[in-house]
Image (cartoon, rainbow over all chains, first blue to last red; front, side, top):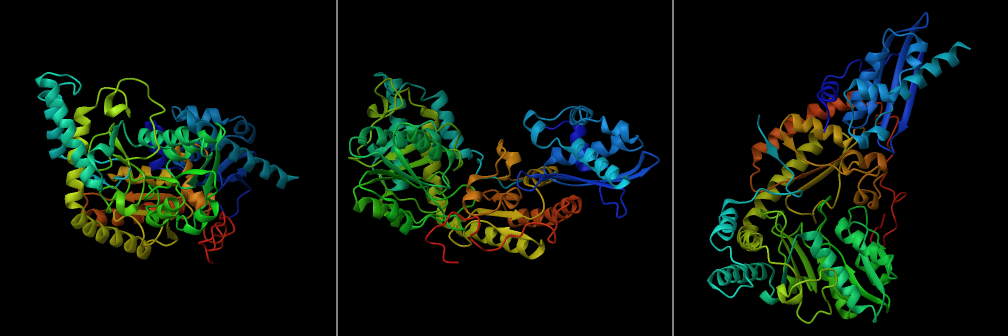
Length: 122
Length: 407
């Protein structure tokens, strides 16, 4: 039911972990619905220089988290804000339809982290 | 790769002895049992033999067995048929919160057709209390349907006591014995039930065949199927003779081997439970610790989600199942776990391991060996841990209050 890319990111997730002195942290989902994603950012000169994630959830939740970190790394804040959940799913060659709404939150977590970074800048 | 199948509550492989019986009815004894000629008579004799075997296996008379397309049809047929024929006597039906959807949704459907429905709560082990049932019965109650053993957590219900209450009040009692058949003794007189469901593919028979036991004299009629006079007007449609013959043989074998196999499986089950609890931290056994099916193990692993565990296990050749929302095809985790007062977040981490004839002690060792690093890896990826989430106490905060719960 999952594509090869999803399984690859599930089996070998990129950028797992935490950044203790992160410039921005984003958290979406809740344990009740079964998916929680937490994304940590290091930002230098408006560019995402490091990004890590921790996720509680199904295979799709872990794979999308991993994929979004790969897509966002090296991008500017504004570029990263344009990444959508849809784009993350497409980069994984698609997700099963029932996963599109519940486990496809990785871009939201990224955006939450960026928002947190911007709040800190104020 | 080594393959370890631990999902026998989902389905089982068909035994060679059963295949042989089935093949014989596909090729040699292919006649329609309703036909007068030689071929028809052969089909008829296969049908009669199978009916006797199924009846013997559950302590019934052959004429009390009606073959169906499986457990779901038998459950629908039992509940709907009793409700339709007895609606002049009352409109109240009682079931439990942990039933299979084949029962729960059939009862709920009656609720939309003018029947009053009571869904009994369960305690933290998934057990229905006799006291709760006694309190729920009214003078309008016509039917009680409570499963013999639960498919998700393995808890065995006190059917004998529950059915005795029903009988004393002249209320019909149905039990879904799909999971208990072949695992623990299933005898219609000892249980004291009026209707009982079994299924072929859970006992090393094929899919698409089941049976409903209907005690002689029970106020029941076929209310869903219209058609020919097969099964003495109780189930229209040309009989699935190969499936029926297979079910007969599967029942016969299941009962013959039950005592010995139950001891062997209980040993494996308890080893599996002990090893997991000893070697993996933050795991909870779900279901009753002792009053459970001999082949049934179910856990909730904290801080991680069921589907990601299943995927990881599958990569190691281990087949199991989960009550997580992600595997149920809905947004809600298992209704059984929620009814037991297990919070959503913990229910998402449920894993069910159901053992069978082909499992060995080496399989249990292989599972433990592979499960430890899987849990460790997923937990390392999880933002949850014992400090920030899952304040799950043995309190009844989330529990729908059951009077058998004395915490």
